[in-house]
Each structure stands twice: as structure tokens, then as C-alpha cells.
Image (tube, rainbow, N blue to C red; front, side, top):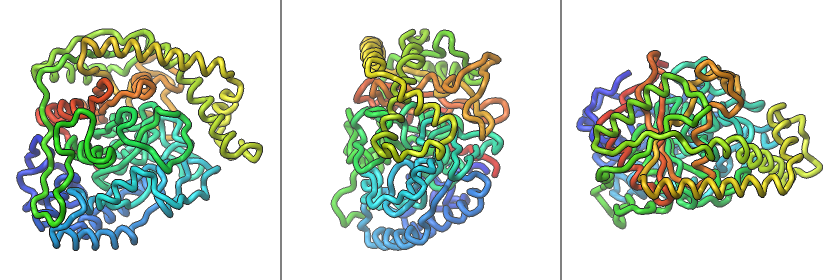
Length: 497
């Protein structure tokens, strides 16, 4: 399948009204423009996406619960608002999916665990509440690994989710169901969580845009317990930068740190002119490129593709300076991350279940993680946080002479779908987080970051890279991402399903 339309830098198309593509292939921005023009309704868009879900979800196991009947009623109400010239937002009527660790009223919220298999929240988490207030339509929940603590997507409740680009392989995790949906056309938007790379790495494995907001940009309320306090954020997963920017503004409450734009909010109804704010392309930037962390292997196809990105950014008149990643980032991965994640799981289980906890309901990997967490001391956790403080100081010093960082998003290409991690990368043995070395430090430092597609490997398997900014750089990241997308578009690529 190909996109015959010519994409504009803002993610819209020059031939929306006569597009031969089915509605499920449209971006959220395209749907919005067609709703405004009256050439498509939310009812018809939802039906197209529902038909796509029925056709491909059995192949992927990405959506684990649906609400299509309620969604149909909401699409009818949205259609009426558009016809009256009173949409709730530019994305009124746009369907989306929600990751299974983000509460949606009345839908299962299993967290990929048998311990939560019967949980149905009575309230939406704030992020869902905000998107629904903008008229967006939740169609279902997406699959995750157990407690969203692994880099693939499989669990004892629903089984494995597979990658639309190669169904023998994983889409990554923990937002694996979310990315599989967007990559396959089950909605143009998904929201996921990123606590150690769980949006960026899966997006890199499926050819998507994934935004990890900085600390505090998207507030969290009415959610599940925090396993990674302050590190796990909610962000958008989309096919285009314009869609990611618009959804991120809705999630953040209307504007972004450093945002000089009006935030994408509509004038007070009734309104007939729906404007999609253009992303401002940045002046030449100083970009530090870390192709690897010394001692951590990177798949050669990923290294070659991200090297090309560095050259492309230089070709867009940015100053790209290639350096080795600081040694403290490897120290964080080996010394601090295990302590933070293991104690976080153990503390969450203790606070939620206490003596009633049934360890046998968990997989051996999560049992081992919880046991390790219980054996750690307060001193261990103190030392881990002290290392994080030192790492933040080094990163702050780096940003004194650089505007943004460029890194691979993942060190490995996708691996078999039921395996928790690749055993080797570039012929060298690696542990469970060997594929994930480039992402978790961003969460611990509270920084914003975006994954974007790079050139796929020789088989067509997607490869991604990430741009990381200092606190408050959300708009700068989106501006550079839009500039890169305009020069090297990707949204026309679809997996064969």
C-alpha cells in the first residue's frame, strides 16, 4: 500500500478531497481537515478503522479490549458537532487507542498482569479525560508486557503482540500493542507510557513518531501506582509529526514549554475555520551525536542508518558534532536503573497487595525482579538516586554547549516476539537491557525526546533515532522533527498485512 498524495510539511495532503486511500490510512490531521471540509464524517472514519481492526487485529493481537458500540455513538455526536460548526477541538471525532496501563472508565486495565485481570477503573486517567474533552474517541485498549517493565509485549493474560512489519518479531515494549495499532492502521493515534524508553523504542521498531514529554509537561492523575516515580510519562504515538504535536498539546492542557504558538486551541464555538498551527522550523542548531556508549554493541544496520541521519541533519544546516556518550550513562544503566526498577516493583506490590500477594500469578522474570527489589536496601536506593543527580549535572553541562542530542533509539532490531530480549547484538552477548541502553537515562533526567523513523534495514524493517532536548525543549524538538520529516518523509510506508 502506498500513499499517492504529496505530503506537506505540516502533515496534511494536497489531495484530501479526492484521496483514493481508505480513511484508516489518513493521519489525524487529514481526518480533521476532511471533517471540516465535509468530505468525510467521524462516523465513516470510525467505521473504516473498525473494519481495519477486525481485519488485522487477529493477526497482531494488539487491541485487547474494545468499546466500538459506545465509540459509534460518540462518532455520531461528533459528526453533528462538525455539521453545526461547533467541534470541541480540531481533533473532534478522531479515533485513538489507549495503552492498557492507562485507566479508561469501564474498560479493563490489566497492566498485563493476572493480578489486575479483573480491574475496571471507575474514572479515566487525566490524559484520557483531556483527549475525550477534545472530542477524540477511544476505541480500545492495547496490549503490554507484565507491569510494563520489559522491552517486548507478551503476558500471561493476553499473550504476545507481534510486529506488523514482520509478524515473527516483537514490536518492542512496553507500548507494543499501541505501536502495532498505529503502524497497521488501527487508528491514527495511540497514547502510551514511557518510563525507560517504552514509547521511543517500540516506535523505532515500527516506523512511527513517538514523543516522550519532559517531566511535568503532561500531568498524571487518577492513574495506576507509580513503579518508576517521576520517570514514567504519557505521550503520543502517531505517523506524523503534526499529529504528535497536536495531541501533545491536548495532553499538556493547551500549550508546550517554550511554545510560541497558540497551542492549537480553537476559537470559541461556533467556528468554521479550523486552524492547525504550523511548527516553526528552527534556526541552525548545535546537535551532539552519540552513536554509541563505549562497550555497548549496536546493530550495524542501526548504526549505518543513524549515521545517515546525522549527515541529513548536517545537510539541513545544523552543526552535528559526533562524540562518545558519557561514561556515566553506562553507569546509570548498570548501577541505578536495576535498583530503581526492582525496588519500584517490590514497593508497589507490597503497598497494593501486602501479605495477600500471590507471586505465582506472575511470570518467573517478574517474580525474580520483585525478589531482587525486596533484597535491596535504603542505602542502595540512596546511592542510585545520587548517581542520577550526578548524571543530571553532566547532562546539564552538555546542554550548555549543545541544543539537542542525537542517538539511536534502540541498539537492536526487533527479535522473536515471545523472547523478552535479544541474546546478542552485533555478534556480542547482551543482557535483558542490552537493546535499551539509549533511553532510560532520558526518563531519569526528566528530559523531552522524540523518536523519528530513519532509513529501514535492507529487508524493510524500520529503524528509528531519537532527538533529546534539555528541559522545556518540546517545541524545539517538534520543529526540528517537522523539518526533518519534510525533507525525508515516511508516512507513505505501510506494512503488508
